[in-house]
Amino acid sequence: METERLIIDSIREADKEDYYINISHDKRVLETFICRYADTLEDFDFSSYPGRQDLFAIRLKETGRLIGIILYFDEKEDSCEIGYGIGSAFWNQGYATEAVGRFLEYLFREKGMRTVYASFFTGNDASRRVMEKCGMSYDHFSEKELTYLGIDRDLTYYAIHRKFITLRDEPELKDAAAEWFNSKWGVPKQAYLDYMTAYLNRETEYGWYLCLNGDRIIGGLGVIENDFHDRKDLTPNVCAVYTEEANRGQGIAGRLLNMVLEDMRSKGISPLYLVTDHTGFYERYGWEFFCMVQGDGEPGMTRMYIHR
Image (cartoon, rainbow, N blue to C red):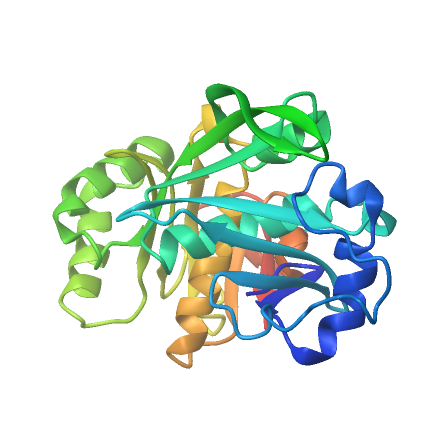
């Protein structure tokens, strides 16, 4: 798993010192993240961490070094809880939000979760803000749920109910998806139905990607040959990127963009192009301005981005 600045992958034997420094020996982290304190590196029992399937390292891309950890637990049929910790030397730089957002995408998309919970010691506003930025909201309060560091702790639970899918995962949504995209962009519904039918019939691998909240579509995008512009050689194009206004700022569009990039790469389709009037948004997810193009029937030129 990757984000703009981070890699999230398995714990390795070589991570022992970084894990010790940033988690098990960092008393500021251990004030809110439940873990046994290790006084010295020699006393630190690291043996159970490498190879675990539920525990992941959070690494800086530029160094590959572990700066934190993230895990899921209490797994049920379609739900689980997550926990995370970032070394205090790396606080207040947005790393926790970036990692949690990407990890939620993994749990929804790869693990098939529909609901993910997280909890924090009541009063830990920093952790609460991370959860809210990632689209989680208050679920319930648990008084004196556990004792940690000799103190009875209240826990506040947040939850997120999401499902990120391709249209092939749930083809029965085709008509509703075409109607939803039509309502956002004004392109005829039949055009969307034609693109989606070709994808579902495997006439093309250019797909359609949705974010669901329950049974309601709250975000989506597609991939088509050409998004109505004059540079027919710049193909394929990500199109129709949209998130419902009430759900913006929760990382949904970013997760959908990462999802389409990973899916297309797995099929050997790269680079991807995208036309937009926005500046500053797509750059967060690795897109670069490429050139100006002439939109069909448009009086002015439009920005074209590329993801290599």
